[in-house]
Length: 255
Image 1 (tube, rainbow, N blue to C red):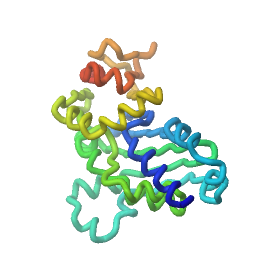
Image 2 (cartoon, rainbow, N blue to C red; image 1 turned 90 degrees about the vertical axis):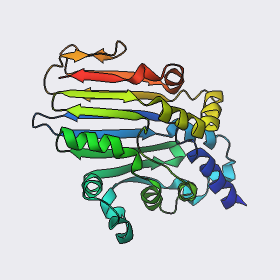
Image 3 (cartoon, rainbow, N blue to C red; image 1 turned 60 degrees about the vertical axis):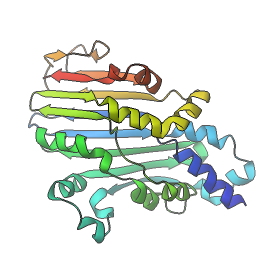
């Protein structure tokens, strides 16, 4: 019964994959390449659910597990899956790493996806196809014998990155615009999770950070914060704010 309760609880927690703190960081380099890091912090959601667990469950050896590891996407794929990938998908996977930092006793779990794009075209392809990267198998492998693994393997789809934005990237411009039809589909799929998160006062902050090697020329979103040296742009909102005004996180930067 204890094991079934643990797995069920984490299945519920992971169904809140939309209810996490999300931070996108873009580090543009002088040679035109860009290092992109998607960070997903599930710690607050885990903390809520940990408070619902009896001490007898939290004292089990599985909950003492601590993880701090990184896995390459391509190396984690079985041969049967690799053979189905296009040349572009192979390149995307080989240049993408998944990292997990987990300490359940401290109610901490952070997942990050790192990708090195060689140029503007590579970055645009990555951003437009990021949601196709399924994290299920990789997260299960990294979680090992943790009770969280049962929840991960039970998930029908845990994908990386917002799938409702369209991107246009050039050597001197970064632009993304929300696709409202895709966003409405996302809302329908996650409606129950979003409602429950709101009821538990989980506000789901979403931040985009762009770092440049030279001052930017123009930023078109009035909510964006431009650093004093004009080399950093920060745009942030909560999911509730995005639902009320889907265009609030649209962004166009000339640099």
